[in-house]
Length: 219
Image 1: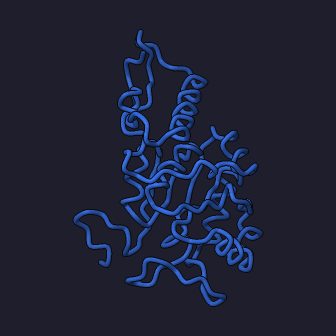
Image 2: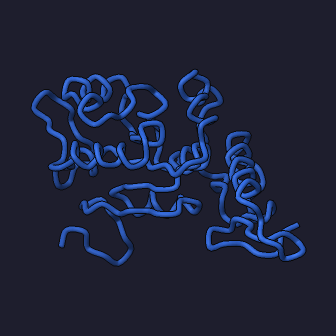
Image 3: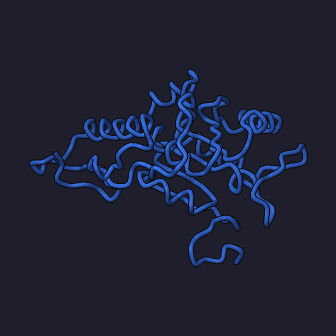
């Protein structure tokens, strides 16, 4: 059906060698997201002519009810424009050396410059297209902590479960990215970023957790 693909494996030309229209490209992206939501354990995108877009079957999938809230349904329907997701730990909050999670207390502070950076991202991408992703944290706890800091008010981030998203395991970030059609992702772990083949831009934030093979993150 297709004769040429871009670097992410998304078709760019049809079987006759003609460029796919912008509307056609958007439709293919929505089909990809729908495919992943139906079953991350189904056939790989290699069978669907889009290589490596679906997580391998040994990765944990999100529960069926994950996208059931009204705000998350609206976020899925609004996909299309460029979107950005930012990891919580190691990016918005600094991790003490040797710790894998931050203890959120009234004394815990955001990373230096986090408020200004998120405000700039919200202005650039728009509040509907900015997401914060948590792994291993209770969403209500983090939401309450951010509210106490005035994070949503001061950055313009939307205060709902569609834009502050909690997953149980890091591999589930791949399904979040595909379902929401995230085009940009900021994280402190390379192991997370390498699972996001359809993200146009992936940014590795300096942190001792960045786990780049062969690189000493502490230097």
